[in-house]
Length: 349
Image 1 (tube, rainbow, N blue to C red):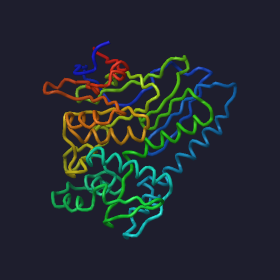
Image 2 (tube, helix red, strand yellow):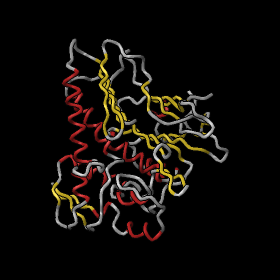
Image 3 (spheres, one colour):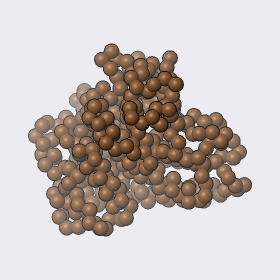
Image 4 (spheres, rainbow, N blue to C red):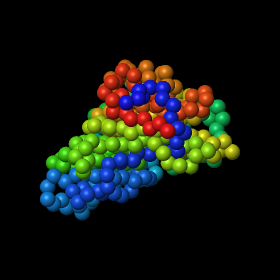
């Protein structure tokens, strides 16, 4: 197969994850719905004669509703919203799952030198994202004032509680919560002794076993959009094996502030939107929560710095889609991971 390093691809449109197996057969059930402002899909290849899809659907929706009630900043009654309104340096008791996500987020913040950070709620709002967006472009003074109380070090985890070192600090788990939810659904289905499964929420994926044809699951990763192209095409086909896959891009979620189009990836260290030649980053990891967070961090980093961090964390495999100085698309994967290189099939036209 062609090398996945420095490959010029046709300029393609969009990035989503698409299941590239054959159409559903009688041995497959597909449970779908909406959650976290997006859609979810759970495919199960049956290993038994009967499965109660109504119970599956009810349990899955219940799990997702519970996660939303803890981690959605769009719900004013959620656990995270209550914490964000907590104007005290006293411990705030939170749920076990909330602690789990915050602890993992802080660990990834350390590994990424702060380029992944969940204390960016006010920064996101400042740039027009989230439930309380501003309607005008911020200035440097506004950004610097918020940076005084952001940073993962301002949140302390103590057993069953979180403590703010600075009472203005607020959390935003949007860059990790979907991955966590995928892991939760995956564990639920595996717990039912179904071993051939595919779980996806808004493009974040975790799968195991085989598809309905007893072949490996295949994922098509779309190339980011281009002004001259409105067609949906794919940059590559990926065989994830039993890994989770999460992709972050900087073009589907944007805001127009005073005529300036800004992507939603904010550099948590500078407080400004990211402007780079990286169009999307796909991360493979054992946990979808980890893949989700790292994909966000690597979008905030330039490629060289990101690659250096990835090579220091061998549990990760990463695929960058970038644009070079000639406006050609380039696929670049973690150079030391031979297993990943064998699982990537670029689509060249």
